[in-house]
Every structure is written in structure tokens, then in C-alpha cells.
Length: 93
Image (tube, rainbow, N blue to C red; front, top):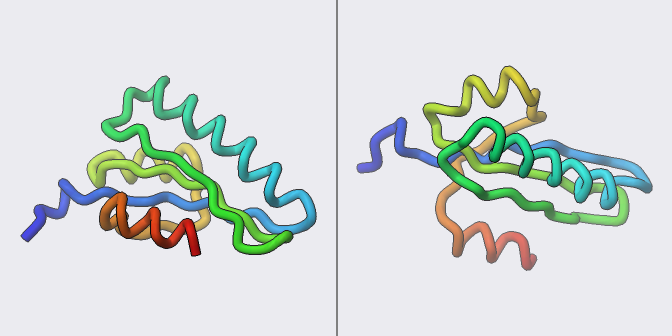
């Protein structure tokens, strides 16, 4: 069984409206900068586009980094990041 502090957590920001796609892409750049500045354990970010008016930007953090990242960045929601293959399959859907 995986130790709780070893889990990867996906922090998610939702963007809605006609500019959602561009806003999510732009926000992803800021998440990448944050990862470098804060020297986070994982360098995983991405965007998903669900419709012409709903996109998300996300980053993956180690669970021990989650509280500080949440406090600074204020994500809209989060979930356990299971593995790269599973998340890649979701992105293609």
C-alpha cells in the first residue's frame, strides 16, 4: 500500500467561457514557473479542453507539498494523480 505522503496530488483550475482554452494554456505557463521557483518534486503540468467553453490547467505535487501550494495558488479542486498512463488516457477522451 502506498504511503500517504508519497501520493501525487493533481491540483486543478477550471476556466469557463469563450476564452477558456487560451486562459488555461496561459495559466499553465505560470504553474511551470511556480514549479521551478519553488523547486517542487514533480514537473508535471497540463491542460485539458472539455468543450469550447470549459478547459482546465493542472499541476501535480507531492502530497507533502500540497498544503503550501494550495495556500499560495488557490486551486479550484484536486484529486489523487494515479499514474501517467491513466491520466494520458483521460486526456485523449
